[in-house]
Image (cartoon, rainbow, N blue to C red; front, top):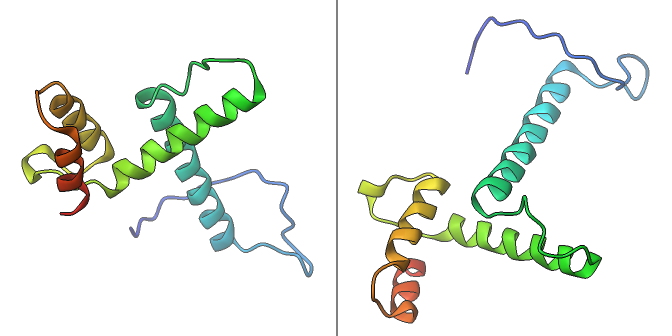
Length: 114
């Protein structure tokens, strides 16, 4: 997206010398960092990672892994176009389907093989 907007960012990355970081590199770093923030927002809001089940380090690790696996499964799912294409649309579709009396094994195979 080409815009003429000027941004002023404060960073401790070197601007001169052998280790200098270009403006484009800083922009890319911020863009990647924003992607990480959006991932954690989705995990906390929709996959309930904001409330820890345990205070045990192993339990917290397992809870984070389960949330990440659920996130990756959502990325792989194919849903009908009328539901949309975002992760939240896929999540809502799953919630709706799980409320119906269906064979989850056949339904899951269908979702993963589209």
